[in-house]
Length: 360
Image (cartoon, rainbow, N blue to C red; front, side, top):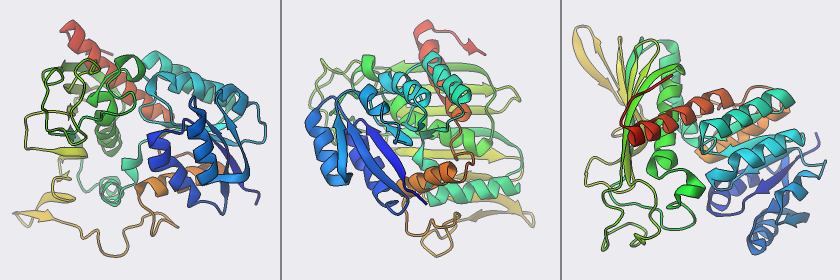
């Protein structure tokens, strides 16, 4: 089989920290042949470290997309440009893996969804927390019916003091928001996927900027610059689905709380519940006794995907993504699912700004 040829658009932190190392582990069936970044040094460094011997370097993504030999594009740019680049790549005949969230706005996400349907090319969004062993095991429990009807969920994305101070994370124009759209999006995706519920009815939310103007912050990555902090530092939402199921979402980069959890979910069903507070825990009643099941994920047998052994979540994401292209199957993260996540994030921001609930 001829190797899939991949182009990387955006060679910053997420590309270097996740996408390119993960794709490199798939070198038997894919190769990175093109790299694009507004800062040419970044693209050249990435090409040298991860690319083929004759890998090309660009500063304009449109030029990269003109290369008809490229099969797949990974979009690793700030949120504002996700839609523009993804639509162009799909129209150019490329399959696209786009970093989360799908887009800055629902309107932009809809353009991406429509382009994928129109072109017939595959589109997936990089929600890698689905690929963790605890997530995949919990999903199997749920699909087997162990929790029954899941009618309440909590999406957890709470940091005490871990504001990202590099790149454009604090820039509302580039990103569309702060912790809600950055890490809240992972927790919400995880919760919706576990519940298999993508039909929202109403959303009430509130975003806060209460700590962003402070100095001497004890932040994990050093003090932030209050002048650059143009997004919220925490945000919370309450979501009601069409079938009556409800989800509470909590997100923060900076919050005076010791209850810290990130990219985790809590689920309550008619036959049992689950949470990821201290590893995966399943709770239910058996023989008229309350019991808690704590799976040993350090033991063998936790890779629920052929070829998944020895791969971390990001590497498994890359492997399964390439499989979906080679075998012409659906990717694990469907664009229709990611679209609903963006709808709900935008609804929380809208509700916060207007002081009113948003109805679908």
